[in-house]
Image (cartoon, rainbow, N blue to C red; front, side, top):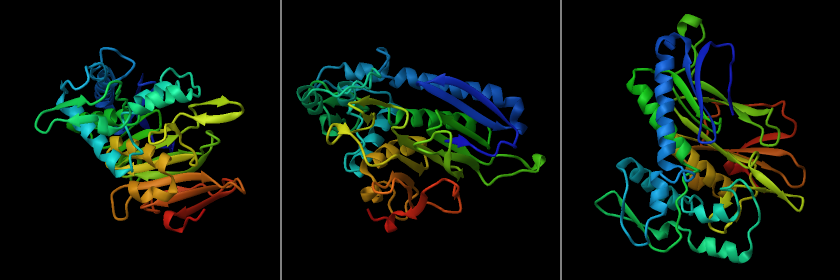
Length: 345
C-alpha cells in the first residue's frame, strides 16, 4: 500500500528497522517539530525491535524463549499485555493467529529466509511445540511459563504494528494532531487529516493505496483512513519456489502448512497491532470465516482479495467496510468488488 494524493505537501521522516522502511509523515504546517518528533518516534520503534526481535539474543523475547520449561519468567508490563492481546486474538480467530508458531517458521526455513519444505519428521517435531495452550499466564503478576520444551514465541505478525502504536502514542503526547506512520507499507496508522486549510486542501483522513497482490506496481483501490490502523498480509514478496510451485511464508499454525486460497488480506482496526494480527488470521481463514475477524457491527473491517479458479479474475471481498472510504480501481482488468455476505465460491 502507498499513501496517495501526491499534490499535498508533507514532511517525511524515515528509517530502516524490523527489516523494512518506517516513515512518519507530517503536514507541512508541522515542519518546526516534524524532524525532532519523527526521529523520537523512530528511536522508539528501534527500542521495540531490541525488545522483541528473535534475531537478537539479548532481546526480551529471546530470553523468554531460552528459559527453562515450567519456570516462571517475568515480563515487562507492556510486553505481557501484548501477549495477552495475542492470546485473545488466537481464541477469536479459531487459533489461526498463533505467536507460538516459531518452531514451524524455523522448520520451513522462513526465519533464516531460506525457504524449504521440511521432512515430515521435522515438521511433526516443530508442530508438537506449538499452541497457545503451551503458555501459562500468571493470574496476578506479569509472568508466563512454558508447559513443554521447545516452545518459541515469534511476534513477527503483530510486533511491527505494536511498535507503530507506541510511536503514535509518543507523537500525540507531543501535541501533533495530524500525521501518518507506516512500516514497510503493510502496517499503517493515521491520526487526523492530510493537508491543511492553509494549503486549500483538507482531506477527510489519509489516503492509502492498496497494492495489487499480483502486480505490485498497480493498485486495486484507495482507502481513506480516519483515525484508524490498517494491516495487510500476503505472500507476494516472501515465498520460495519448489518444483515449480510458489510456496508462501504465511503458515497455518493449525496444520503446519503454508496458507493458500487468499492473495491478500487487509484489516482496518483501532490499533496497528490488532490490524496486523487480524490480517494474518484473515489470510489464513479466508472468506468462509471472515465473520470471526470482522464481526457485523464491530469496529473491524476486512478486505480479502481472491483469484477465481476458473476465470482467473480477482474478487475483492469486503466485510464491515464503509464503502464511502474505499474507492476501487475499476480500471483493473477482471476486478469484481462484493460484500462477504454475497460471496459464493
